[in-house]
Image (tube, rainbow, N blue to C red; front, side, top):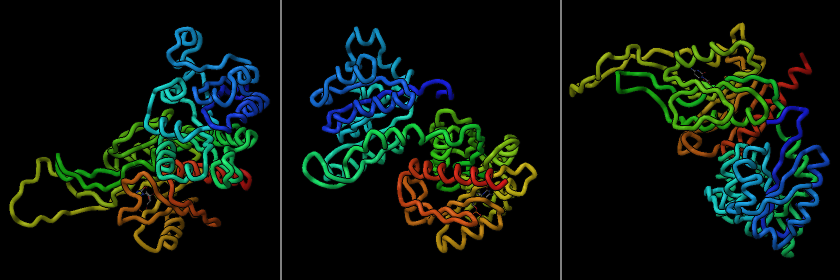
Amino acid sequence: MTGQTEARKIIVGVTGGIAAYKSPELVRRLRDSGAEVRVVMTTGAKAFISPLTLQAVSGHRVHEHLLDADAEAGMGHIELARWADDLIIAPATAHVLARLATGMADDLLATLALATEARIWLAPAMNRAMWQSRQVSDNCRRLEELGMYLLGPGDGGQACGETGLGRMLEPDELVAEVMTGSASLAGRYFIITAGPTHEPLDPVRFLGNRSSGRMGFALAQALVEAGARVDLVTGPVNLATPAGVRRTDVQTADQMLTAVFESISGADGFIGVAAVSDYRPSEAAADKIKKTGESLTLQLEPNPDILASVAKSEKRPSLVMGFAAETRNLEAAARGKLKTKKLDLIAANLVGNGLAFDRPDNALEVFSEQHHWRLERQSKMALARRLTAIIAEQLSSERKTA
Ligand code: C5P
């Protein structure tokens, strides 16, 4: 990622939609705002706009081919992938959204999107009925889960003569989102807990829960994208570590508590997303517990409350946030926990009956002492980005009132 003095390096991907006539204006405005820009076009894009136009406005030869020895000898797809801080696909047709959602690598743009670690922004542009289709909606949800950002689309008159959602956002709106929509947490340090804990009963069995860890991992990724440093302490999950996140793996609540307190000094925020087991077996048997045919009683004892311990510790970060999974009375329960655990923010959701746990999407209600935000059902990645904006706002208001 670029420092403040280095120009942001942006690849604009142009695909074959009528809104491609706005792409040169987008390139020009990105350059006006200080970015260095390269352009990649698909074959379809060339039916709408000439590479020469985009070469003129970007100041560089346009990249068009994956399997062109000359082009690859210059700046091939891997060099382009490494060069970029951001890849903006504008317009993004239904076709390119489908190709990216399935991981196709059938042309230069799709291969680049697979190979790059840059932020990927998508500005969909299509007929309103296409935009509303199940296929496009499902692809967009998948793309957000994969960590890509959707920009729009906007509402209004369309090239096909219809009116509705599906217009590509205007170049100045795209530039505003891309140039200012990140890095609001630069210099901040967060610790996040995620996933379940496994409390051993014997060498092969444990007490656990259905948490997948997805929400905590998505939040870690969103905070890093916003410029923060993140330590993620996670219970057993089957998830890849987001780029730039430092991960510590633990099994039990006790180990999670220790790992959290090892890193807490200097943290600006602690976010307890983990579904920590409230109880653990008083004793873990040294050998596998044998079946006897008799009923078996397990003696449990309470685990430490990691979140409450952080909130009352001398090393308390200025922002402490919890999550609450409830089966009823959401607001009362969430506000109760906000108070008793001495939190600044709590994100609450209803669970049970297939809601929230082990699913890619969720809906959340977030409470602070003074505010209440309702975040409707969306992918956990999209939710994580909304939460990141709330967290940034909360931290900056603390700074103002400090
Ligand atoms: O009280 P409850 O378990 O519903 O609180 C949930 C919140 O507290 C979550 O943020 C969870 O990560 C945190 N928690 C914790 N340690 C525990 C139990 C819950 O950090 N032992």
